[in-house]
Image (cartoon, rainbow, N blue to C red; front, side):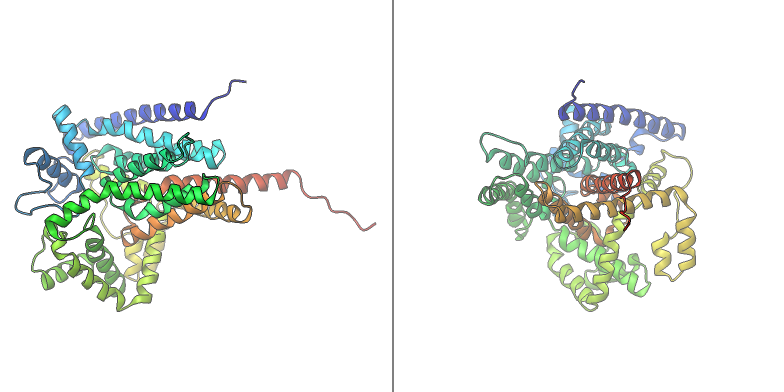
Length: 470
């Protein structure tokens, strides 16, 4: 029988992904054209000044025109966003003179990520499970949306999965995989800073591939040093311009602009937008988000947010935990449909109104129940994600109980998944933020479901015989 190698399967997956996405994008362009929407508008290139895409474009244009990294000269150097993805857009403008090519370039990027998910999974779980995980990631609507518009997630995911894949590559020079992995993770951090906080966990994955603890520690140390060397130049830039030796101002700003007001909304019932406006006016005298997210205000924002949160520490701990877990059951279909209507690809108005979470905060428990159980497609999707989470728990339990060569990697992946969810916290309504943990949730979740099913089937087919006492 003809044997198919993992690399051949990965290549087939990447090719299939490219074909499927070209077909999907063709349908989206056709639907948007039928609605009279320009291609630029479909890609969010004509969006408001505060959208992610618009800011990325402004940063790319600033890099090309002035050699500076700023959204506008009036605001000054940008501190929250990092230069990796704007540099990619600047390259697209240099090569093609337009950003309408970005979705088609990102198809190649996502195809590479799909292939890497399979190759990573094939090391630790059955090949059929790795294949299923790669396919589910490929057809996830939020992954399709992120590939469709100019946002940083596709490139971030390629370099993140590439880094984790490199950690397990056998090589003559034992240090080489760790150097490559460190460089790739460093590049991913320039796409999204969340990778910086995941560095220690990814370094621990080296324990799954080393022949001894000493070799593992040495490899993890090499990896960490390379990551640090990659990101330090940007931290030095921020220190020279603002006096803050940090990679991004996102930590303090998100704590003030998302965690604190959303918590206060859950606690008091006042909308988080109103809380944001009141605090901005009270402490800073401005509502300009571009100004508030600079390092100039980061220490004050962090102090304000922590004062509010630490006034109710146990309530916040419960709130943050619940919102983090919400990431595991978020609906990609809802997110995709919302954005396609907003961009004029799908006909009809955007769906407005409170979701089930908002209804619960308002004490409308009956309405929340109706909202949840009357939208069957999204309910099925949420139940499937919840089942994957349970499967992931079962896989981790078995890895810890029946220890083998893959147990360490599975346990670190378990920690990785929950670290991403914890860092997302109150912003878990945006299922795009699930993408960093999704490959590992799929690999472990599908593996757990597969093991539970096969064990149940074997017991059903071959029930244990009971010896009678006579």
